Image (cartoon, rainbow, N blue to C red):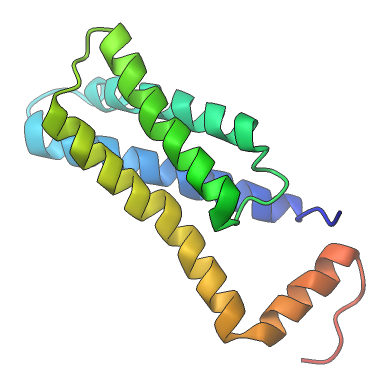
Length: 142
Protein backbone atom coordinates (compact mmCIF):
# COMPACT_ATOMS: atom_id res chain seq x y z
CA UNK A 1 0.00 0.00 0.00
CA UNK A 2 1.27 3.45 -0.90
CA UNK A 3 1.63 5.81 2.01
CA UNK A 4 1.00 9.52 1.61
CA UNK A 5 3.84 11.92 2.24
CA UNK A 6 4.04 13.25 5.81
CA UNK A 7 3.38 16.75 4.49
CA UNK A 8 0.03 15.59 3.07
CA UNK A 9 -0.93 13.98 6.38
CA UNK A 10 0.06 17.12 8.29
CA UNK A 11 -1.83 19.38 5.87
CA UNK A 12 -4.95 17.21 6.22
CA UNK A 13 -4.75 17.27 10.02
CA UNK A 14 -4.31 21.04 10.01
CA UNK A 15 -7.24 21.45 7.59
CA UNK A 16 -9.44 19.36 9.89
CA UNK A 17 -8.39 21.39 12.94
CA UNK A 18 -9.12 24.62 11.08
CA UNK A 19 -12.63 23.33 10.34
CA UNK A 20 -13.25 22.62 14.03
CA UNK A 21 -11.71 25.94 15.03
CA UNK A 22 -13.94 27.75 12.51
CA UNK A 23 -16.99 26.17 14.15
CA UNK A 24 -15.88 27.39 17.56
CA UNK A 25 -14.96 30.88 16.39
CA UNK A 26 -18.27 31.21 14.56
CA UNK A 27 -20.17 30.22 17.67
CA UNK A 28 -18.05 32.52 19.79
CA UNK A 29 -18.60 35.48 17.46
CA UNK A 30 -22.34 34.85 17.33
CA UNK A 31 -23.06 34.20 21.00
CA UNK A 32 -20.18 35.17 23.28
CA UNK A 33 -18.52 38.14 21.59
CA UNK A 34 -17.93 39.82 24.96
CA UNK A 35 -16.22 36.79 26.53
CA UNK A 36 -12.55 35.93 26.66
CA UNK A 37 -10.57 33.86 24.16
CA UNK A 38 -10.72 31.00 26.66
CA UNK A 39 -14.33 30.58 25.58
CA UNK A 40 -13.12 29.51 22.13
CA UNK A 41 -10.93 26.83 23.72
CA UNK A 42 -13.89 25.66 25.80
CA UNK A 43 -15.91 25.30 22.60
CA UNK A 44 -13.07 23.72 20.58
CA UNK A 45 -11.78 20.99 22.85
CA UNK A 46 -14.76 18.57 22.72
CA UNK A 47 -14.86 18.68 18.92
CA UNK A 48 -11.07 18.48 18.67
CA UNK A 49 -11.14 15.40 20.90
CA UNK A 50 -13.84 13.88 18.69
CA UNK A 51 -11.74 14.76 15.66
CA UNK A 52 -8.75 12.97 17.17
CA UNK A 53 -10.91 9.94 17.83
CA UNK A 54 -12.07 10.03 14.23
CA UNK A 55 -8.47 10.09 13.00
CA UNK A 56 -7.67 7.07 15.17
CA UNK A 57 -10.78 5.07 14.25
CA UNK A 58 -10.40 5.69 10.51
CA UNK A 59 -6.60 5.55 10.57
CA UNK A 60 -6.78 8.77 8.62
CA UNK A 61 -3.01 9.03 8.24
CA UNK A 62 -3.24 6.24 5.64
CA UNK A 63 -5.64 8.10 3.31
CA UNK A 64 -6.09 11.55 4.87
CA UNK A 65 -7.74 13.16 1.84
CA UNK A 66 -10.20 10.34 1.09
CA UNK A 67 -13.83 11.36 1.27
CA UNK A 68 -14.91 7.77 2.00
CA UNK A 69 -14.38 6.29 4.51
CA UNK A 70 -11.85 8.66 6.12
CA UNK A 71 -13.81 11.90 5.76
CA UNK A 72 -17.14 10.43 6.79
CA UNK A 73 -15.70 8.69 9.87
CA UNK A 74 -13.71 11.78 10.91
CA UNK A 75 -16.81 13.97 10.50
CA UNK A 76 -19.07 11.58 12.41
CA UNK A 77 -16.66 11.18 15.28
CA UNK A 78 -15.88 14.91 15.46
CA UNK A 79 -19.55 15.81 15.62
CA UNK A 80 -20.81 12.99 17.85
CA UNK A 81 -17.78 13.15 20.12
CA UNK A 82 -18.07 16.91 20.41
CA UNK A 83 -21.76 16.84 21.26
CA UNK A 84 -21.38 13.98 23.77
CA UNK A 85 -18.42 15.65 25.50
CA UNK A 86 -20.30 18.96 25.66
CA UNK A 87 -23.23 17.22 27.35
CA UNK A 88 -20.97 15.32 29.76
CA UNK A 89 -19.17 18.53 30.77
CA UNK A 90 -22.40 20.57 31.18
CA UNK A 91 -21.60 22.87 28.26
CA UNK A 92 -25.01 22.23 26.77
CA UNK A 93 -26.03 20.92 23.39
CA UNK A 94 -29.27 22.56 22.34
CA UNK A 95 -30.96 20.90 19.35
CA UNK A 96 -30.31 23.98 17.20
CA UNK A 97 -26.59 23.79 18.07
CA UNK A 98 -26.52 20.09 17.21
CA UNK A 99 -28.05 20.77 13.79
CA UNK A 100 -25.76 23.70 13.04
CA UNK A 101 -22.61 21.88 14.15
CA UNK A 102 -23.65 18.74 12.24
CA UNK A 103 -24.12 20.70 9.02
CA UNK A 104 -21.11 22.96 9.44
CA UNK A 105 -18.73 20.10 10.13
CA UNK A 106 -20.19 18.11 7.23
CA UNK A 107 -19.69 20.98 4.81
CA UNK A 108 -16.16 21.76 5.99
CA UNK A 109 -14.66 18.36 6.87
CA UNK A 110 -16.19 16.64 3.83
CA UNK A 111 -16.01 19.73 1.66
CA UNK A 112 -12.26 20.15 1.48
CA UNK A 113 -11.88 16.43 0.79
CA UNK A 114 -14.46 16.72 -1.98
CA UNK A 115 -12.48 19.55 -3.54
CA UNK A 116 -9.32 17.42 -3.45
CA UNK A 117 -11.20 14.53 -5.10
CA UNK A 118 -12.64 16.83 -7.77
CA UNK A 119 -9.23 18.28 -8.57
CA UNK A 120 -7.76 14.80 -9.03
CA UNK A 121 -10.58 13.98 -11.46
CA UNK A 122 -10.37 17.26 -13.35
CA UNK A 123 -6.57 17.14 -13.63
CA UNK A 124 -5.70 13.45 -13.95
CA UNK A 125 -2.08 14.29 -14.82
CA UNK A 126 -1.75 15.71 -11.32
CA UNK A 127 -3.14 12.45 -9.96
CA UNK A 128 -0.55 10.49 -11.92
CA UNK A 129 2.24 12.72 -10.62
CA UNK A 130 1.03 12.28 -7.05
CA UNK A 131 0.78 8.51 -7.53
CA UNK A 132 4.33 8.42 -8.85
CA UNK A 133 5.53 10.51 -5.91
CA UNK A 134 3.78 8.17 -3.47
CA UNK A 135 5.53 5.20 -5.09
CA UNK A 136 8.84 7.01 -4.80
CA UNK A 137 9.28 7.20 -8.58
CA UNK A 138 10.74 10.42 -9.93
CA UNK A 139 8.07 12.46 -11.73
CA UNK A 140 8.30 12.46 -15.49
CA UNK A 141 8.29 15.75 -17.39
CA UNK A 142 5.52 18.19 -16.67
